[in-house]
Image (spheres, rainbow, N blue to C red):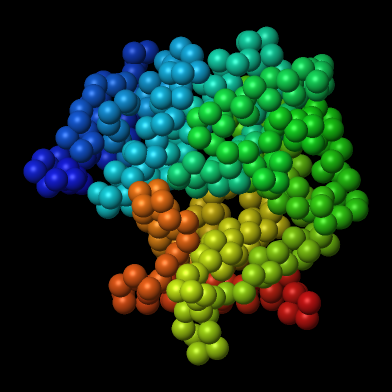
Length: 394
């Protein structure tokens, strides 16, 4: 793959590949090239492990302060400087036409490494082995790009006092805020008691959801369905993973209530099938991204899939014949398109200070047609969800 510098004066070849052997202790020596800046770093085992998920090739491109310094950060200041490079990295990769799913894979690996290192810096080894840090939301699905709200939780060993864990996680949340990750407006953070509990309490919560199916319980279940362990004693998450995978066995009657959320927002299309906007703007998250993410998440929960991420779940559902092949392929393409459009708008908003949002008036005719087609795919998918969960009469 060819990469050009922003000024068009320098040209590089970016090799995509997967090492066939485990890296040596010192890591693979690599040269990271980005916009004419080169730095020698090491592709260590931790980063390889995080990037190895799925069949996609590794994407290797970093510049200025290499994020590989994350694993060697000695203090919070050093780690904060690493975090500050991530958005620049994303902007440059996106500007050079790198496919979005590869960028998500790389950024997800680096974000997890950053969280793991922060966890190590703030918690002594004796405590790290008695809890497990989970990430949820786009981060849990491996779909985070620019920094988003904190979405995390902590599973405690039964002998670790909750008060002690909460004090540690309040420091953790404060550090993330300094790194540019704002608090979750809904309070989904391990610094809150309801998201920082012993394993037995988490298991009891899931059993209660199976029995009662209250709206607030089902909302929390949907959030936990995206949970992914990133630091601490990862084995503490395994019992919860098994319970989530088997939820449909005893909670199938609640799945329709969960799925209904995918239909709550109107698809922004007019009666004649054209883009429906307000002041030339379109809410792509509610109208396009959320219905796909939540509808696919609910289907994956029903099928007992452990697959991480929306794109991987779509492929798994296609293999299981839950989704027709054409619809599944269209959903994957539409989802990537929506994320690409949102990222482009977010990056532009960062540069010029305007509010985030998709202004369709400045889009090319081709992009508008692609967006319109993608929203028609969403409309068709919502109809499929409604049929599968018998929501037509709701």
